Length: 120
Image (tube, rainbow, N blue to C red):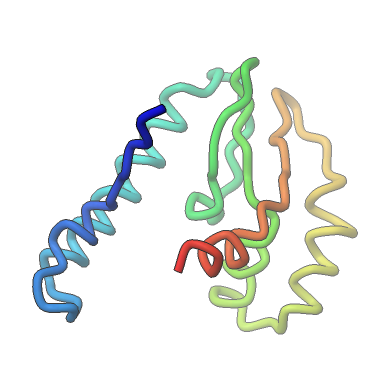
């Protein structure tokens, strides 16, 4: 079986090991493109959570948007200047239990930090 190796655009553009403006542009543009594509592929009745675009990780087969809980917590800490405990408490006690009119979001806990560490 042939194993396909992949690289991110940032890895391909990283010539000297130091971040540069082009790499930052690639990261930003890819993130914007990813968000646009996820929203485009979602059902028009799917609920989109304002301020949590960076936590979007996918869509379900029925067109619901999928958000990573860990990334949502990180966004709350960075944008609302609350500590992680308060962010997690708000998510688990309020937002994740909220039922909206439309196709409610799906929440997953990918532990993305662990995934990224294992790739190093």
